[in-house]
Image (tube, rainbow, N blue to C red; front, side, top):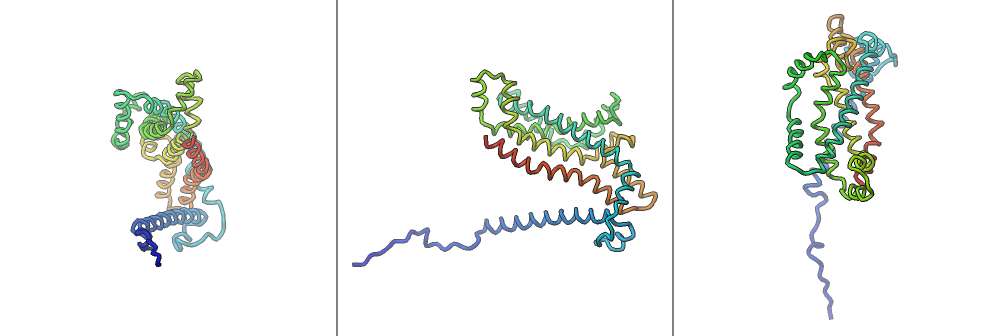
Length: 294
C-alpha cells in the first residue's frame, strides 16, 4: 500500500531571490542614501573651507584646513553685521512661525469637523493659495505695504510671511485633524466641555505631532526665505541672515573675493537651523507617533 502526499501548488513554485518590486525598492534605497551622502559631504566640505584662506582654497579646493582658526567667522560676523542679522532672523522666523500655526490650527480644526458648502469653498480657497507663486504677488505686496508704511519693517515682513504660509499650514493641519478620532470630541461633549474647551484641552494635545510638524516646516521656510526679505527690506539694520549674506558677497565683489569669509557666512546661516532640526527631529517623530496613536 503506497501513500502519496499532495504538495500544494503554491509550495511548488520556486521563488526568485528578488522580485521586480524588490529590485526597484533596493535601487531607490541606494539612490536615496547616495543623495544623503552627497548632501552630507557638501556640508562637511563647506565647513572645512570656512577655516581656510582664499589662496589655499583656490590652489586646493578639496584640501583640509591647516589650522582651526575662527578668523573667517570673525570677519564675516563684523563686516556684514551678522549679529544684528541673526537677531532679526531669529525673531522673524520664531514670531511668524508661531503666529502662523496659532492662526491655522483653529481654522483647520473647524474646517475638518464642520462639513458645509461654505467650509468646502474655504478649504478649496486655501488649496488654491498653494498654487500662487510668490513672484506673482511680489509687486502688489510691496505696493500695499508701502501704502501703510510697512516696507523696510520687520513687522511688515512678519505679516507677509504669515499670509503666505497660511494656505499650506491650514491644508496640512486640516488633513491631520481629519485623521483624529471623533470619539474624543463626543466623550468631551458628554463630560460637558464646550467646543473651545474641547479644542484647547483635548484636540491640541493629541494633535501636537502635526502642529510640531507645521511649526518646524514654517521655521525652516522663514529662516531660509530670501526673495521677500530682499524686496521689502532696505536698511542694513533690518536685514535677515540670507540678505546679509548677499550683501556680504556684494562687498567682496568690490573689495576682492574672500572665499573663506564667504564659506564662514554660509556656515553661520546653515548651522543654527541644522542644530534646531537635529534637536527637534526626535521630538518631531515622537510627537507624530504619540498624536496618531491616541
